Image (cartoon, rainbow, N blue to C red; front, side, top):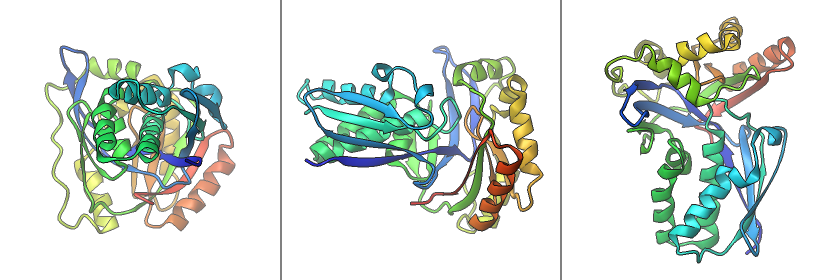
Length: 295
C-alpha cells in the first residue's frame, strides 16, 4: 500500500439549538451542519508501519496537544481494539491548518479522516461499519465529520442524518485567535438554559435556492451558545461586528461553541473580496473564504 491522503474539512454549524443539561451533564441538540471545501481543512496521510504513530506539523501544530492524546490516534486505537488488536498499524502525519478550540470541529474532523484512511487501507464493509459504530464514541461531531455531508445532528450530537439538498453556500470564516473550549461555554449556557430544545423547523421546500435558504436560516434558526460565548469572550462580539460591516453579508452567526464566526454571501467572489478587506484590517485574525458544501 502506498501513502494515502485524506482532507479533514472544517465543520460549520449553520444552526445549533441546544436543550437543557441532562443528568449525565450533556445536552441534546439539533444542529444543521455543513462542511468547507478542501481549501479550509487539515490534511492527514497514512502509510504502513510497525506500530500506530502520529506526527503533527502545520501552522496550528502547537495547539493540538501531545500526539499520544490526539483524536487521530484515539480513532486508530479504537479501530484496532474493535478488531481484537489485528488492525495493521499505520503511521499518520497530520498537517494542522485549522485553529483548535474554534467551534469548527477540527479535532473531530481529524479523527474522522483517520477513520476514512483506515477504511481505505484495510477495506471492506465490515471496516466501514466498525468506523460508523466507533465514530460517535470518539466525540459528538465525529460521525457527521466521517460522513462529511450536509445534514442534521441530533441526540447528543451522536446521531446524524444527511440532507443532500442543502445549497452550496459562499461563506467567510473568521477566528479572532481566542481559544474557546466547549466545556466552559456549555457551563455558562446552563445557567440560563431553557427547559427544552428550542424548536427547529424543517427545511424549506425551496431549500436549493441560496438566497431563500439564507432567509430561512435568519428567520427560523439560531446558535443557542452564541450569547454565552460572547459574554465570556468579547473578541467574538468584535468579530461579528466586523463581519456585519462588510458589504454583501446575508447571514451572520457563530459556529459551534466559538470562537469562529461566519458570514454567508451571494457569491464566492464577494466572500473572497470580503476576506481580502478583513485581512487588511485584522492581520492577526484567521480569515478564510470558502464554499460550504463544496467538494
